[in-house]
Length: 280
Image (cartoon, rainbow, N blue to C red; front, side, top):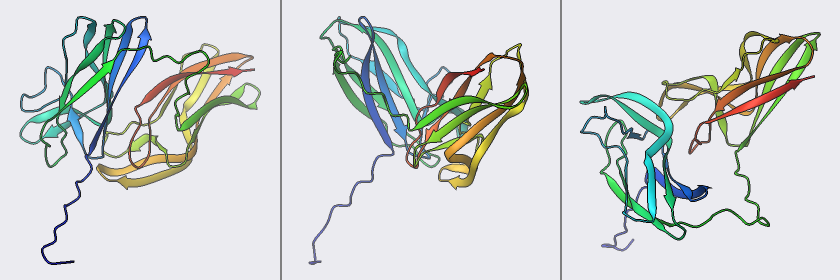
Protein backbone atom coordinates (compact mmCIF):
# COMPACT_ATOMS: atom_id res chain seq x y z
CA UNK A 1 0.00 0.00 0.00
CA UNK A 2 1.50 3.40 -0.98
CA UNK A 3 2.55 5.53 1.99
CA UNK A 4 -0.03 8.16 2.85
CA UNK A 5 -3.00 6.28 1.37
CA UNK A 6 -6.06 6.16 3.65
CA UNK A 7 -9.20 4.08 3.44
CA UNK A 8 -12.48 4.90 5.18
CA UNK A 9 -13.46 2.57 8.01
CA UNK A 10 -16.68 0.77 7.05
CA UNK A 11 -19.64 1.79 9.20
CA UNK A 12 -21.00 -0.97 11.44
CA UNK A 13 -24.61 -1.92 10.68
CA UNK A 14 -27.21 -0.39 12.97
CA UNK A 15 -28.47 -2.77 15.69
CA UNK A 16 -32.03 -1.64 14.94
CA UNK A 17 -34.22 -1.82 11.83
CA UNK A 18 -37.52 0.01 11.29
CA UNK A 19 -40.21 -0.81 8.76
CA UNK A 20 -43.33 1.35 8.45
CA UNK A 21 -46.46 -0.04 6.77
CA UNK A 22 -50.05 1.09 6.23
CA UNK A 23 -53.15 -1.00 5.65
CA UNK A 24 -56.86 -0.38 5.24
CA UNK A 25 -59.19 -1.78 7.92
CA UNK A 26 -62.79 -0.87 7.03
CA UNK A 27 -64.34 2.00 5.10
CA UNK A 28 -62.13 5.04 5.72
CA UNK A 29 -60.32 3.52 8.71
CA UNK A 30 -56.63 2.74 8.31
CA UNK A 31 -53.78 1.44 10.45
CA UNK A 32 -50.20 2.64 10.43
CA UNK A 33 -47.67 0.18 11.88
CA UNK A 34 -44.09 0.92 12.91
CA UNK A 35 -42.20 -2.40 13.09
CA UNK A 36 -38.97 -2.33 15.09
CA UNK A 37 -36.51 -5.23 15.05
CA UNK A 38 -33.60 -5.12 17.51
CA UNK A 39 -30.46 -7.21 17.45
CA UNK A 40 -29.82 -9.44 20.46
CA UNK A 41 -28.77 -7.53 23.55
CA UNK A 42 -30.51 -4.28 22.57
CA UNK A 43 -33.78 -2.82 23.86
CA UNK A 44 -36.08 0.20 23.91
CA UNK A 45 -38.01 1.37 26.95
CA UNK A 46 -41.78 1.10 27.35
CA UNK A 47 -43.64 4.39 27.56
CA UNK A 48 -45.89 4.57 30.63
CA UNK A 49 -46.57 6.85 33.57
CA UNK A 50 -43.94 5.07 35.68
CA UNK A 51 -41.08 5.60 33.20
CA UNK A 52 -38.18 7.46 34.79
CA UNK A 53 -37.67 10.90 33.23
CA UNK A 54 -34.04 10.02 32.54
CA UNK A 55 -35.13 7.26 30.12
CA UNK A 56 -36.42 7.82 26.59
CA UNK A 57 -39.15 5.64 25.08
CA UNK A 58 -40.13 5.81 21.38
CA UNK A 59 -42.56 8.64 20.64
CA UNK A 60 -44.62 9.33 17.52
CA UNK A 61 -45.86 12.72 16.34
CA UNK A 62 -48.21 13.33 13.43
CA UNK A 63 -48.40 16.45 11.29
CA UNK A 64 -51.69 18.34 11.45
CA UNK A 65 -54.05 17.53 8.60
CA UNK A 66 -57.78 18.24 8.53
CA UNK A 67 -58.27 15.18 6.31
CA UNK A 68 -56.77 12.88 9.01
CA UNK A 69 -58.39 11.99 12.35
CA UNK A 70 -56.28 9.94 14.76
CA UNK A 71 -58.07 7.28 16.82
CA UNK A 72 -56.65 7.18 20.33
CA UNK A 73 -52.96 6.98 21.23
CA UNK A 74 -50.24 5.02 19.47
CA UNK A 75 -50.37 1.47 20.89
CA UNK A 76 -47.45 -0.97 21.25
CA UNK A 77 -47.39 -4.76 20.85
CA UNK A 78 -44.51 -6.87 22.09
CA UNK A 79 -43.13 -8.85 25.02
CA UNK A 80 -42.47 -6.55 27.97
CA UNK A 81 -39.44 -7.35 30.12
CA UNK A 82 -38.64 -5.81 33.50
CA UNK A 83 -34.96 -5.30 34.29
CA UNK A 84 -32.88 -3.24 36.69
CA UNK A 85 -31.13 -0.24 35.16
CA UNK A 86 -28.05 1.00 36.99
CA UNK A 87 -28.75 4.25 38.75
CA UNK A 88 -32.43 4.19 37.78
CA UNK A 89 -34.08 1.11 39.25
CA UNK A 90 -36.45 -1.33 37.56
CA UNK A 91 -37.70 -0.37 34.09
CA UNK A 92 -39.93 -2.01 31.48
CA UNK A 93 -38.47 -2.59 28.03
CA UNK A 94 -38.93 -4.34 24.68
CA UNK A 95 -36.29 -6.58 23.10
CA UNK A 96 -36.12 -8.28 19.68
CA UNK A 97 -39.42 -7.15 18.12
CA UNK A 98 -42.09 -4.57 18.87
CA UNK A 99 -44.81 -3.01 16.74
CA UNK A 100 -46.27 0.46 17.35
CA UNK A 101 -49.76 0.89 15.89
CA UNK A 102 -51.76 4.04 15.19
CA UNK A 103 -55.31 3.82 13.82
CA UNK A 104 -56.81 6.75 11.94
CA UNK A 105 -59.66 7.84 9.68
CA UNK A 106 -58.74 9.53 6.43
CA UNK A 107 -60.26 11.12 3.36
CA UNK A 108 -59.26 9.51 0.02
CA UNK A 109 -55.97 10.91 -1.24
CA UNK A 110 -55.01 12.43 2.13
CA UNK A 111 -51.40 12.33 3.32
CA UNK A 112 -50.42 11.19 6.80
CA UNK A 113 -46.93 12.22 7.85
CA UNK A 114 -44.85 12.89 10.91
CA UNK A 115 -41.78 11.83 12.87
CA UNK A 116 -40.77 9.23 15.43
CA UNK A 117 -37.98 9.59 17.97
CA UNK A 118 -36.33 6.71 19.80
CA UNK A 119 -33.26 5.62 21.71
CA UNK A 120 -31.84 2.09 21.82
CA UNK A 121 -29.75 0.75 24.69
CA UNK A 122 -27.88 -2.34 25.80
CA UNK A 123 -26.42 -3.30 29.16
CA UNK A 124 -23.33 -1.16 28.55
CA UNK A 125 -24.47 2.01 26.80
CA UNK A 126 -27.30 4.09 25.39
CA UNK A 127 -27.12 5.27 21.79
CA UNK A 128 -27.88 8.92 21.03
CA UNK A 129 -31.61 9.52 20.34
CA UNK A 130 -32.59 9.39 16.66
CA UNK A 131 -35.49 10.99 14.79
CA UNK A 132 -36.90 9.72 11.50
CA UNK A 133 -39.70 10.91 9.24
CA UNK A 134 -42.53 9.04 7.54
CA UNK A 135 -45.10 9.93 4.90
CA UNK A 136 -47.94 7.95 3.31
CA UNK A 137 -50.64 8.86 0.82
CA UNK A 138 -53.92 7.16 1.69
CA UNK A 139 -55.08 4.83 -1.06
CA UNK A 140 -57.08 1.61 -1.13
CA UNK A 141 -54.37 -1.07 -0.95
CA UNK A 142 -56.77 -3.96 -1.43
CA UNK A 143 -55.97 -5.99 -4.58
CA UNK A 144 -58.44 -6.30 -7.41
CA UNK A 145 -60.59 -9.42 -7.57
CA UNK A 146 -58.34 -10.78 -10.31
CA UNK A 147 -55.24 -10.17 -8.19
CA UNK A 148 -55.63 -12.01 -4.86
CA UNK A 149 -53.21 -10.96 -2.16
CA UNK A 150 -50.52 -13.57 -1.47
CA UNK A 151 -50.71 -15.22 1.94
CA UNK A 152 -47.86 -14.17 4.24
CA UNK A 153 -45.18 -16.80 4.76
CA UNK A 154 -45.30 -18.07 8.34
CA UNK A 155 -42.14 -20.24 8.26
CA UNK A 156 -44.00 -22.97 10.16
CA UNK A 157 -47.12 -25.15 9.95
CA UNK A 158 -49.42 -26.40 12.72
CA UNK A 159 -51.78 -29.39 12.38
CA UNK A 160 -53.99 -31.08 14.98
CA UNK A 161 -55.42 -34.57 15.40
CA UNK A 162 -56.83 -37.08 17.90
CA UNK A 163 -55.01 -40.42 18.00
CA UNK A 164 -57.06 -43.26 19.45
CA UNK A 165 -55.04 -45.49 21.81
CA UNK A 166 -57.88 -47.77 22.90
CA UNK A 167 -61.58 -47.52 23.68
CA UNK A 168 -62.26 -44.07 25.17
CA UNK A 169 -58.58 -43.07 25.40
CA UNK A 170 -56.89 -40.62 23.03
CA UNK A 171 -53.78 -38.56 22.49
CA UNK A 172 -54.72 -35.04 21.42
CA UNK A 173 -51.73 -33.93 19.36
CA UNK A 174 -50.57 -30.56 18.03
CA UNK A 175 -47.91 -31.07 15.34
CA UNK A 176 -45.50 -28.23 14.56
CA UNK A 177 -43.32 -28.32 11.43
CA UNK A 178 -40.67 -25.58 11.22
CA UNK A 179 -38.92 -24.40 8.07
CA UNK A 180 -35.17 -24.94 7.90
CA UNK A 181 -33.24 -22.34 9.90
CA UNK A 182 -36.13 -21.55 12.26
CA UNK A 183 -36.69 -22.69 15.85
CA UNK A 184 -39.31 -22.44 18.57
CA UNK A 185 -38.61 -22.21 22.28
CA UNK A 186 -39.62 -25.09 24.54
CA UNK A 187 -42.50 -24.85 27.00
CA UNK A 188 -39.80 -24.25 29.60
CA UNK A 189 -37.44 -22.08 27.52
CA UNK A 190 -34.76 -21.58 30.16
CA UNK A 191 -32.46 -18.60 29.78
CA UNK A 192 -32.95 -15.47 31.85
CA UNK A 193 -36.76 -15.36 31.83
CA UNK A 194 -37.09 -13.09 28.78
CA UNK A 195 -38.01 -15.81 26.26
CA UNK A 196 -41.54 -16.87 25.32
CA UNK A 197 -42.15 -20.58 25.79
CA UNK A 198 -44.61 -22.40 23.53
CA UNK A 199 -48.00 -23.07 25.13
CA UNK A 200 -50.95 -25.31 24.20
CA UNK A 201 -54.14 -24.99 26.29
CA UNK A 202 -57.40 -26.91 26.09
CA UNK A 203 -60.82 -25.43 26.83
CA UNK A 204 -62.98 -27.04 29.51
CA UNK A 205 -65.29 -29.75 28.18
CA UNK A 206 -67.65 -31.74 30.42
CA UNK A 207 -67.34 -34.73 28.06
CA UNK A 208 -63.54 -34.76 27.99
CA UNK A 209 -61.23 -35.62 30.90
CA UNK A 210 -57.63 -34.49 30.50
CA UNK A 211 -54.93 -36.61 32.13
CA UNK A 212 -51.74 -34.89 33.22
CA UNK A 213 -50.13 -31.95 31.46
CA UNK A 214 -49.23 -31.34 27.82
CA UNK A 215 -45.93 -33.04 26.93
CA UNK A 216 -43.42 -32.08 24.25
CA UNK A 217 -41.95 -34.69 21.91
CA UNK A 218 -39.06 -33.70 19.70
CA UNK A 219 -35.29 -33.27 19.53
CA UNK A 220 -34.69 -30.83 22.39
CA UNK A 221 -31.70 -28.54 21.86
CA UNK A 222 -30.10 -26.80 24.86
CA UNK A 223 -27.44 -24.21 24.16
CA UNK A 224 -26.25 -20.72 25.04
CA UNK A 225 -27.25 -17.67 22.96
CA UNK A 226 -25.41 -14.37 22.80
CA UNK A 227 -27.22 -11.76 24.89
CA UNK A 228 -29.20 -14.33 26.93
CA UNK A 229 -27.95 -15.55 30.31
CA UNK A 230 -28.08 -19.30 30.93
CA UNK A 231 -28.85 -22.19 28.58
CA UNK A 232 -31.84 -21.86 26.25
CA UNK A 233 -34.14 -24.78 25.32
CA UNK A 234 -35.54 -24.97 21.78
CA UNK A 235 -36.77 -27.24 19.00
CA UNK A 236 -35.96 -27.29 15.29
CA UNK A 237 -37.63 -29.28 12.52
CA UNK A 238 -40.55 -31.15 14.09
CA UNK A 239 -42.09 -31.11 17.56
CA UNK A 240 -45.37 -32.56 18.89
CA UNK A 241 -47.40 -31.36 21.87
CA UNK A 242 -49.38 -34.27 23.31
CA UNK A 243 -52.28 -34.23 25.77
CA UNK A 244 -53.74 -37.52 27.06
CA UNK A 245 -57.54 -37.53 27.29
CA UNK A 246 -60.45 -39.81 28.08
CA UNK A 247 -63.89 -39.41 26.46
CA UNK A 248 -66.88 -41.31 25.18
CA UNK A 249 -68.33 -41.08 21.69
CA UNK A 250 -67.92 -38.19 19.29
CA UNK A 251 -66.60 -34.91 20.68
CA UNK A 252 -65.19 -31.57 19.61
CA UNK A 253 -62.15 -30.38 21.53
CA UNK A 254 -61.08 -26.72 21.35
CA UNK A 255 -58.28 -24.60 22.75
CA UNK A 256 -55.53 -22.16 21.85
CA UNK A 257 -51.80 -22.22 21.25
CA UNK A 258 -49.16 -19.52 21.65
CA UNK A 259 -45.71 -19.52 20.09
CA UNK A 260 -42.88 -17.40 18.72
CA UNK A 261 -40.47 -18.59 16.07
CA UNK A 262 -36.94 -17.27 15.60
CA UNK A 263 -33.88 -17.72 13.44
CA UNK A 264 -30.28 -16.70 14.10
CA UNK A 265 -30.99 -13.06 13.21
CA UNK A 266 -34.49 -12.25 14.44
CA UNK A 267 -37.67 -13.37 16.19
CA UNK A 268 -41.10 -12.89 14.63
CA UNK A 269 -43.86 -11.38 16.81
CA UNK A 270 -45.62 -13.82 19.19
CA UNK A 271 -48.75 -15.50 17.80
CA UNK A 272 -51.84 -16.85 19.60
CA UNK A 273 -54.40 -18.87 17.64
CA UNK A 274 -57.35 -21.16 18.38
CA UNK A 275 -57.69 -24.77 17.27
CA UNK A 276 -60.43 -27.39 16.97
CA UNK A 277 -60.02 -31.18 17.03
CA UNK A 278 -62.93 -33.36 15.96
CA UNK A 279 -63.00 -36.79 17.63
CA UNK A 280 -65.06 -39.25 15.59
